[in-house]
Image 1 (cartoon, rainbow, N blue to C red):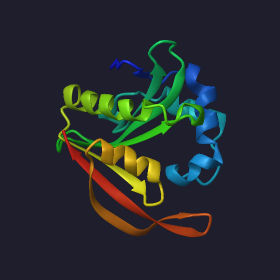
Image 2: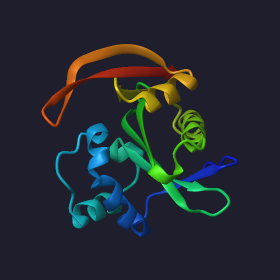
Image 3: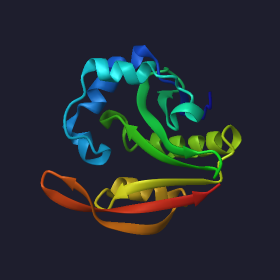
Image 4: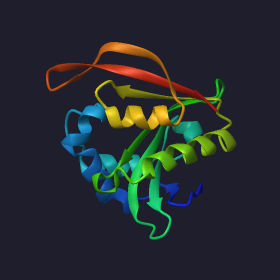
Amino acid sequence: MFRGDKIYFRHLTTDDLSLMVAWENNPENWKISSTSKPYTRSQIEEFINLNQDIYIQTQLRLIICLTNTSEVIGNIDLFDFEPEHKRVGIGILIDNKYRNQGYANQSVQLVEEYCKVILGIKNIFCNILTDNELSIKLFERNKYKRIGVKPNWHLHNDKWFDEFTYLKEI
């Protein structure tokens, strides 16, 4: 898979089940993932066992691992893949204990390379809640341009949040 000096990507496997359950069912992540209730272990296992072909599922989850130890530190999601129009959405999660160490930045750069070289993508987009300052900084640092705002787009705990859309041509 794609490899940088700090991290590399690999495909999701059943060995990742416990971590995926923990991440998906962490209420701190629900606001950004539009989750409103926990997933069952069997639901997550079913997702892992899906054919991980982005051309069939229009989405792909890649696991982010440390280059020197192979420890799993997060994941990158590619979603709404449209090969005809050469575009895809991106979402990223870095485990709390690995944040602010440059892993997200290198992950974004590596996934752009993967999208360009392997998938032939021209446009990558992401959707970020307007109060998610860390993600806004991450994508702006990587030259994503804010192209719009969706007012009152996301409801979480009875409160409405606006959402920015960012785009980068690669």
